[in-house]
Image 1 (cartoon, helix red, strand yellow):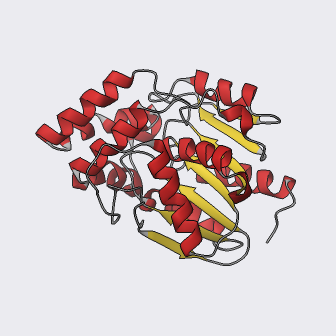
Image 2 (cartoon, rainbow, N blue to C red):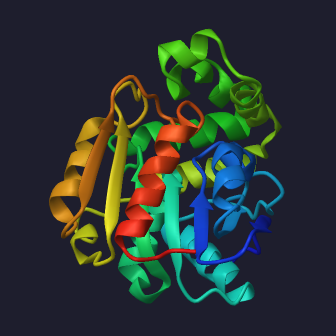
Image 3 (cartoon, helix red, strand yellow):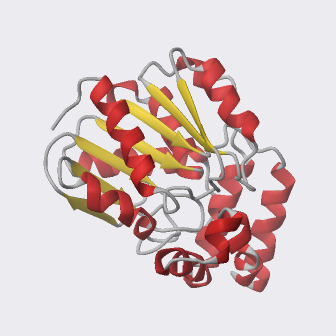
Length: 256
C-alpha cells in the first residue's frame, strides 16, 4: 500500500479520475475544471508518478488497486464514479471487479484488459532503469495523440509529454511490470456497475480489440468510438468527452 498524492476539489457525488501510465493528475485539467463545478472530483498520481512515492518494483495491478482503495478510505469516500484512461481504466476495471461496492459507475478510455506483449513491458522496465526516462519519452507525441493534435500541440499536450522525462524511472518501470502481469479477461464479466467504453479510432497505443472485449463481456456495457481521436483523447476533445461523461452519469441517476 502506497499513500498517493491527490487533488480533491468541488462537492457533490464523487468522481475519481485515474491517469495513464507516464502521466500525472495534471493530465486531467480539462475534465477537472468542468466536473468540479457540479461534483466532487478526486484525481491522483499512481505510485511512481508525480508526487506519489516510488517504492521499489516490481508492482502488480493488485498493488495499484489497493493504493486506490486506501485513498478512498482516507477521504471517507464510500463509492465513486470512476473515469480512467489507459492504465487508469484498467485499474478501474479491476477495482470494479474486486470492490463492487466502491464503484458506482465506470468509464474506460483506451484501456487495455491484458498485456498484448508482456515481454515488451518487461524490456521497457529494464531499459528505463538502465538508461533513464528518455527511453519512454522518445516519440510520445505521435503515439499519444492524433496526427491533428500532434501537429499543433497545445500547452497541456506539450507539458504532458515533457513531464515524462521528470518521472522516477523506478516507479515507471514498476508500473510497466504491473501492465506486463495484467490479464483481466476472466474477471471483467464480474463487473456489474454501468460501464461506458470510449476508444479513439486514431489510438496508436491500445488496439481496438480491448474496447470490443470490454463492451462484449461486461453486462450492459456501452461503447462509443471517437473518429480521429488519439490515445490521450481526454486532452483532444474535452467538450465532447464531458458530454459523454455527464450523459453516462445522469443516465444512472447520479446528479449533483
